[in-house]
Structure formats: C-alpha cells, structure tokens
Length: 186
Figure 1 (cartoon, rainbow, N blue to C red):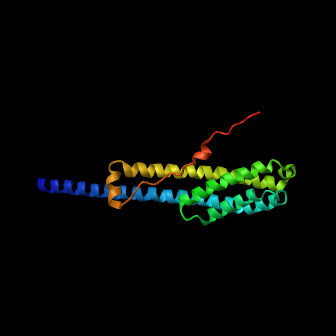
Figure 2 (tube, rainbow, N blue to C red):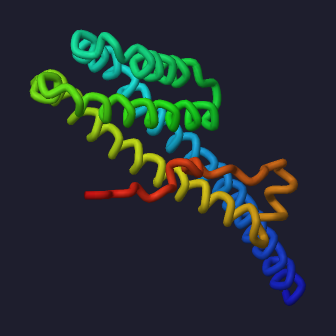
Figure 3 (cartoon, one colour):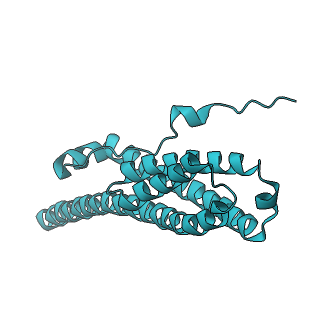
C-alpha cells in the first residue's frame, strides 16, 4: 500500500513538472507573439501615415514650388517606409520621415496662405494624431520586448530560451539627433 502511495506521489510530481514545463514554453511563445503583434500595430500606423503623405504633398505643392529639396525629402522618406523589410528598417525610415515632416512644417510656417488652407490643416491634424498612435504603439512594443527579454534572461527562462534558440529582442530607440531639447529663444 505504501509503495502505491509513493508511486502515486512520484507520478503526480512528474505530471506537475511536465505541466510546468509546457506552461513555461507556452509563456515564451505568447510573449514572442505579443512582440510580433505590437510590431504589426506600429506597421499599421506607419502605413496610415505614409498614405496621408501624398495628400499632404498635393496640398503643399502649389505653395512651395521653390522648396523642392523639402518635398523630395518627404517623398524619399515615405518610399523608405513603404519598402522597409524589417522592424529596424521601418523604424529608421520612420525616423527619417519624422525629420522630413518637421522640416516641411517648419517651411510651411513661411507661407501664410498654406497655413490657413483647411485641407493642409486637416492633414496636419491627422498626421499629429497618427504620430500619437505611433508613439503609443512603440511604447507597447518596447513593453512587450521588455517582458520577453526579462523572461528569457532570468532563471528558469534562460534555460528554456537556450534550448529553444531564443535570443534577446531589440527595443525601438530614438536616434540621438531626436533626443536634443529644442531651443526656444525670444
């Protein structure tokens, strides 16, 4: 009788251990899928922003005939986003587009008629809202990467990660040039 109880306890311990292993494996997979989903949300917002750019460019063209460099910069940055093949490429292209749009809006300040154009103002507002959505999506992506990295770098996750050939994921980062505090002078 005692032998059966001992065998039952050992069998139960083995079952609990196997369930724990399966649970931990599934956790790593879920976290990795969350990262993929987070990136897909960023990609949707980048596409939305890229789709707004041609309309913005049409609104601006008539006013900025002699600002070809600015317009080409926005067009090239949009093309880079559309052709990006990895999250890092898309993030770099997005940073390039952000800089080009800042330049475009700074140049637009010199054109009072353009600043008053309803189409331009509406597109500028939509781009601002999209930028906010991109920012939140980036934050969620980085939070997802943090959870994943914490799981695969701490014990027992590190053991599982090695066996599953899982490596640390990179967070999206802001380029050094965008970290500078703007200077305001009166």
